[in-house]
Length: 312
Image 1: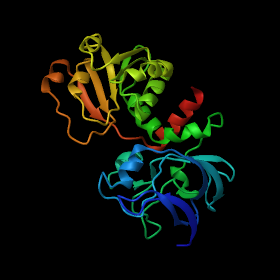
Image 2 (image 1 turned 90 degrees about the vertical axis):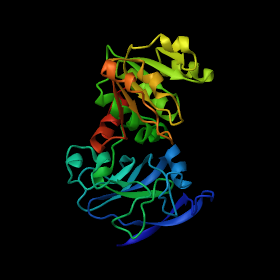
Image 3 (image 1 turned 60 degrees about the vertical axis):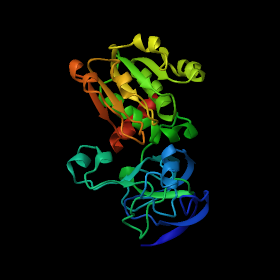
Image 4 (image 1 turned 90 degrees about the horizontal axis):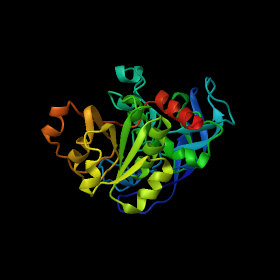
């Protein structure tokens, strides 16, 4: 496969700093789009992977899956994009496209396993995939996203991970007007969840351990902010929430948040604590509550999320 050099930033070992590297990108195949990268968000998973904290990192590692850029060339058979258009790339650059999940637009749950934007085997090159900490990237047109023209390009980048990670469960559990929704944690994921749930028309309650984040939560649109270390404040919403989005990646008492749910309420976990979270059976059974997880989103849903943000 023909390829050409590209400058990038990455690491060659778990304990090494990021440094400038030279990598090779394939020249566009008939269905490929080549994108000059203008912005790339920094996701905490980039750090986890670079440090091999989740194990399985292939070095050299070039992180970055929140990519915004402009198309500089296209393959001969590309029909969806033209040179000069804005484009983005998220966490996936390919999937099997044949399993039931891929056919349903759930490429993030691809049965054989999707190809991640970095640190996955590259079926075109005899290397791993390299991410957005680089000057350009080549991606199949079916895994490229269109960016609404009215959005701030620098602000768009985090939507490709944090944005879709929160949008997908909020959409899946039909969050909207008339619902009271809890967002646990006001970090990279949580602040996105607040803005998206509010734009969907829900009443939004933020739960945080940090007094310093109370005003930030209100500025982002929260209708109320609860300091979760205060039992009296927590009691105000016991059994009153339709849905809870838990974006905390540190160890915490999940039962305290399950007990905020109404009958038939659901809690979706998008934060990833290192150790298992103990779940009490009687936080679920007497109220027919559900405890679930959610991971990013498919390509069509990610495009839907971008369009939603463009409108709101």
